Structure formats: structure tokens, C-alpha cells
Amino acid sequence: MDSSKQSTFDEESQNHQEQAEDVFDYSSRAQWLRAAVLGANDGLVSTASLMMGVGAVKQDVKVMILTGFAGLVAGACSMAIGEFVSVFSQLDIELAQRKRENKTRQNNEKKENEEEKEKLPNPLQAALASALTFSVGAMVPLLAASFIKEFKVRVGVVVAAVTVALAVFGWLGALLGGAPVFRASIRVLVGGWLAMAITFGLTKWMGSTEF
Image 1: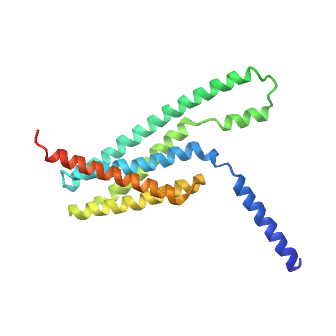
Image 2: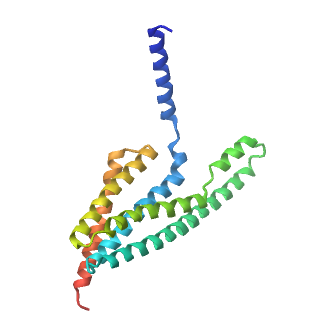
């Protein structure tokens, strides 16, 4: 094969690959991706915010870690149960709708039915994804704070670790979903910072208020 034919072949292969990427249905990932990204971000932000809030009034490292661990366990269970119930409700609605549609379509092909079943939401998958990713996200501030006794250094390390993790989760979610990466990362970062700052500030104020 001469160089001109090889060049043409390479260009055609590249065009086919680009077309395949263009037509890839990112919405097929929406169910598990939504649960996974939501779980990771929620685990990261809520656990870090809890630890920051308690740290505003109790600087003891053990109290801070126990608070984070309790937040991890409670949050993972809550996310899993909530996601399971939510997706199961969605599944019931979609099944009911398809039963109504099938009454008006008597000659459905078997292949079409199988494809429709594959598109149905999976409650167990969503619940496991939420619980697992929540735990992964929650481990970031816990590990960051576990080995630092100095309060100010500990808070700084937690904030830094959470900032990096938020940027990574935002980037990963956008990449897997085919969305703009920069905007997604900034949105996740700003939201996480606000949650931690508000929790720290309000808890600090409550702790200094005499009732």
C-alpha cells in the first residue's frame, strides 16, 4: 500500500471513529452516572461540612473523626435507601406506562421488547452506586484529618483535600457524561466551598451564643 492510499485509509478510520463518538448516546449512562456522581459529591461535601461544623466548636481530633464517620455511615445508608425508593418508583411508573402502550400495539417484535427492558431503570444498581460513591467521597475528609492534631493545620488540609476531590469529581462526571468539563468542575467547587463555609460559620455562631 503506497503512502497516499495509507493516508486516505487513516483519515477514513479517524472519521469513522469520530462519527462513532459523536453518535454515542451519553444518556444511556444517565441513570447510574447520576447516582454515582451525586453520591460522591454528597459524601464529600456533607461529611466535610459536618466535620468543619463540629470543628468550629470542638477542636479535638477524635470528635471530628467520629463526626465524620457517623456522617459517612448514616449518609451512605440514607443515599442507598433514598435512591432505591426513588428509582423503584420511577420503574413502576415506566412499567405501568408501557403496559398501557402495549394495549394499543399488539404486534410488537421480541427484539424491541428486549431493548425496552434493557432501558428500564435498575433500583438496586442505583442504590449500590450511591452508597459506594458516597462512602468514597466521605473518606476523603476523614483520611485528610485523621493524622493531624493541630487544629488549624487539620482544617486547612481538609479544605485542600476536599477542593482537589471536588474538582476531580466534577471533571470525571462531566467527562463520562459528555458535558463541558470546566463549567462542571467550577459548579461543583463553588457549591462545596459554600456548603463548608456556611456550616462552619453558622455552627461557630451557634456555639458562641448563650441560650
